[in-house]
Image (tube, rainbow, N blue to C red):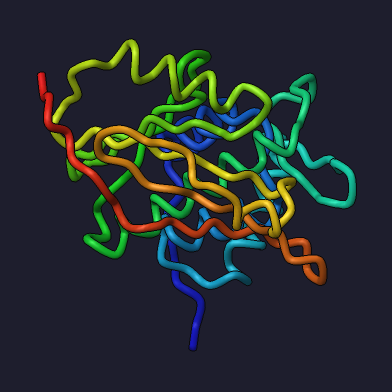
Amino acid sequence: MGRKEIKITRRFLSDTSQLIKVFGAIRYDSFLLYLCLYFGICKETAEDLTEKFLQARIITKAKYADTHILKADKKERASSDKLDAFDVYLAVMKEEKEKGEENEVAAVRTDLPEDYIFYTTTGLMYDVIINNDRGAQKLRLLEKFEKKRKKGEITLFVYPSRIPSEELRGKKPVLFGSHRLGIVRKSPETGIATCILTDTEGKNDRQR
């Protein structure tokens, strides 16, 4: 099958650069999947595009531990939580694209109580919390600050890849309102990370 011809616009380059800046650093393989989902192209075409972006210095390639990563700013410091967050974004994007090719997902980096907020063109809003040393605190703050929730607002609580699989079988955190879990796992053979999203549970009884 021939490679799909695509047109790279200035808007796409600007939006993509801004998206990478939101997360700070992303896995190289995850960026390939992003291009595949965005344009509906194969991995080989995505690799060609990425190489062009690198040559044009729109993005820069680096290494974090044993993983090849991409950054929009060389000075940005990578972390496994930042890398995982983008894979959570991809999982949400994949779901949205399955609903309709034109659907998109916007991401904003925050501080407390969420780490990120994802907005979808289908009307969903995800309050994304990465379960690090402040994970439980962030959940309590979110519940305290968000007494009334919007329709379509979902808490997405993420178990990052650095948490061992055996710990995932522990007690589930108490999540209020409409919520989902995101579980990021990294293949020890390929180094490729994927995020599994659970079904949405609960409902927002107190909507504003």
